Length: 154
Length: 450
Image (cartoon, rainbow over all chains, first blue to last red; front, side):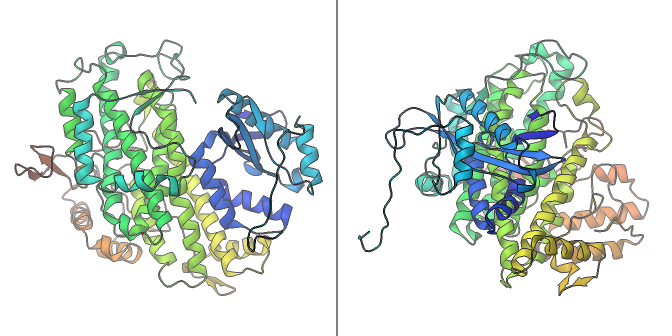
């Protein structure tokens, strides 16, 4: 468990972080989504509680990064570390919290046997994409495709 | 986490299979629907898991810096004698919680809640299997005459009422208990496992990280349903009430606090390098964590009740309601919210044993008034139990001077099953033990195992 010189403590996720994560998400998106975060936190805890981290300042959770290690999806046989959800309290931005969370996850994924980090980003979320590129993410040969279901027409 | 896995010899696996047929009949249901409720998760594996990264050097205590022991003989007679009951008690808790969960499992209001608890039960079974691996894969003959087969049989013969720790001797009244137990009692497990990660007996220390990894979901299986119940209660669901949750919390919290052992103890565990915290220190951290959980649950309730209010406004309502019992703010009464009982409330072990302390820390002087207070704050199903009757009689003896508080603390209702391991056997009889050993003041392991 790392405590940086700036007093930021990064530690594994636990079930008591649901409230703080919900609040950070609400500050960022304007949406209060407790059900969603209860389901997601339970999911990551049952997958591997060490693979997701939160950042604390003065004992208060101000950032989170959720992910896990898996393989065999999309024809990708190699084990990959997937970063899927993250957020930092807007009042705490600019302090390097995102990088600290990322470094801890990356180190854990490496120790768990992952050779590569993967994520998907919505191209309309420029800030998120800039952060990920700053962490060393580059375009992948995989392209995300989608189409609506329903009447079968686009 | 890199782990080695190990299987028990066939005779022990067969004994566990047999035990499951009687005590955990829903295990096959979990296997059948695993991929529906836990898609992409590795299938459940009933095996022992040993963490390979566990330190080989003792981290705390008199022998800090020396090599950890790999066998009971290496550990020495005194430490091994001290550790063996800890392992047996741990095994008892794992099997005991399955027996408790099974009785009310089918009363879950949703399939998801049920299958989450089923997974918890299966992983507790694995933890019990892990303890059996520790008891049977090494030679403990230097400190006990009991054969490994008999140690296993002794644990498998325990039922709700004859387990080592009191929290595992209370029957559940409803599925509310399944969930509150997971959030409150499994949390003690998290603390104990975390403290035992440093254990000077390396096979025991190696067992902790894989168990802790599974325990993280167990706590979520308690907290998430409770959060959703608070939302339902706030929206007026007549079948999910804060009062029912409060009564269950009041039942389990005192027993959870007592699982840390007497507040004055724990020195031996630290001295021998088995744990890195004494009892009081760990218990205080636990209580603080529960304060936070109660606050989160109340915030969940208030946000559901006042969907149009900001987080700041909700926190202000919470602060004002909690400030004074009996207060009402914007229609929210003190009783509408959950409260964490005082740590000395309804205690039968440790420093405050048989002191008549109320929910808010108020002291009672008359037994009848105190029992009335307990009846107001516990469920009817529980207050009508034998456990409460024994407690009330003992409290009366203490108040009349017929029993000291220390002696009363040793007088837990306890049933021990004798003879065959299998409840289908006809050669079974139960006896009530008068001299059940008390929570050792110094060892901090809850009750000593028989």
